Image (cartoon, rainbow, N blue to C red; front, side, top):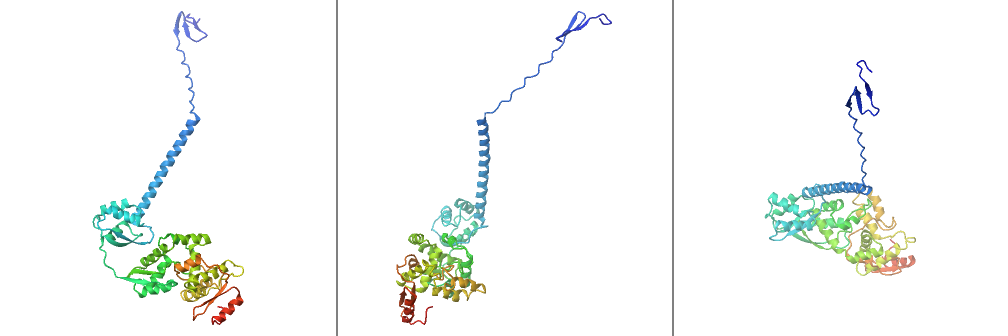
Amino acid sequence: MDQKGKKRSANAGGDTVSFGTQKQPVRQAAPAPRKRRKKRIPQRIYRRGRLGAFFYVTGTLAVCVAFAFFFLTAFNDLLAFSKPNKAIEVTIPRGADTKQISQILEDEGLIKYAPLFAFISEYEGYDGKYQHGAHVLNTNMGYTTMMAAMKEKETVRETIQVTIPEGLTINEIAVILDENGVCDGEEFIEKANSNNFGFDFEANIPDDNKIFYRLEGYIFPDTYEFYKDDTALNVIRKFLQNFENKITDNMEDLMRKKGLTLHETLTIASIIQGEATGEEMTKVSSVYWNRINDVLTFPKLQADPTRDYANEQILTHLDDRGRVIADYYNTYTSEGLPPGPINNPGTAAIMAALQPDDTPYYYFCTDLRTKVFYYAETLDQHNANVRKAGLRGWS
């Protein structure tokens, strides 16, 4: 009992509180919410989602890289920031439209994107202004430079026919070109040694600082029709185009069968070219092949033309470094083949290198007056032949 005589009580459950006889309801606390159980994603679905995200990101990156690559190559093709130096003559047919011209340029390897060329041509206002006929263009030209070149009327240029005999060196060929007004001889030699002309076979020329002239052996001997006062680059490309045409599939098959590279084949052929002509070539070839195949007995080929090349071409055109290179080329002082060809051989010499006669000979000499060849199996036989040929001794 409190002071006012009221009875205060509380039920055990805490549901009501009584004051006297009156009961007042007490709000029951809300039950705690049930903790929701996190729904687990099936493992295979989870993995599939991650895999899909990976492919999406990878695919997006691949597309971006491909687009960037296309943009850069197209931009370079358009403006020619970094393109090879290769002169190409193209012929524009009479009445050809820009689309046809663009395709011709792409087929010739002057551009990569014919549709882009056609678009730029229309944008720059060149459509319908191209002159039909032959045009000498270069792969290092940008699109607008090519357009301007083809817009100009091709003038009639004087031509000259020049015959390059078999077995000449690059130095000797340069003199012929200079004397006939084809191009500057010194520029011809300089460009031949410092430029890549875009032919597949050039990739197989060894990158060897012992090689005297890079394109020695590759200037194919033939009769050519040149423009007067042309550039050395155009002239060299004409030589190399003819060389590429002369190296047949049959020759390449024979090289593979003998385990030879093109460079090695030309090197052997150039030695044969320097020694003989006609039917003697295959016999001379057999002598050198017998020595090559018996390297223990004959480590040195001892070919006179290699010594002549070292003394007459290398030593007269190089400074102190020339003595070292000359020794590499001189097969009386070095073993095996020289680093490269010693002249520019023709088809007969190349085939003789690939298909030598089957002989037992290891020696030969030539009567310088009668041009008769004498062959021998032994050194004693050879010395007798040297006396018979009227030579003073073994050279």
